[in-house]
Image 1: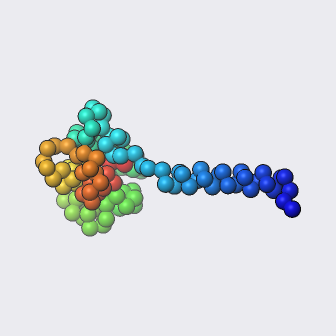
Image 2: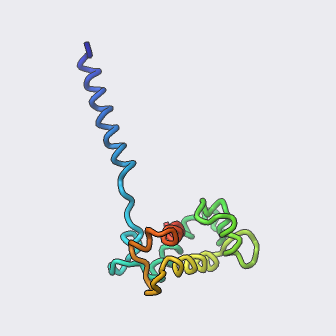
Length: 134
């Protein structure tokens, strides 16, 4: 026979599990919802660069004005870092980071309308761009 205390604990544990399951499967907000400051339903290059600039500042924990592979936290592979690093110092300045953002933005905007829509963010190129924005 189960005690009242154990029944209550089982019920609470079950409810906590449901909440945790919902949190795990909760949908992430679209990058458009996060970065569309003019509320036109898309992200333009200026909005992307603003988000990327803010992220750069957050990731630059040692405040030396550059990001190394560790500070990038997987947002760029070593290969992508090398490609985005014209001075070959194994770090990216903010300008180099923003140039990488612009390159990924153009790849994520195949219709060349100057914006990235929610559908375009769902593509591989759009997801690569999103990693540099948040």
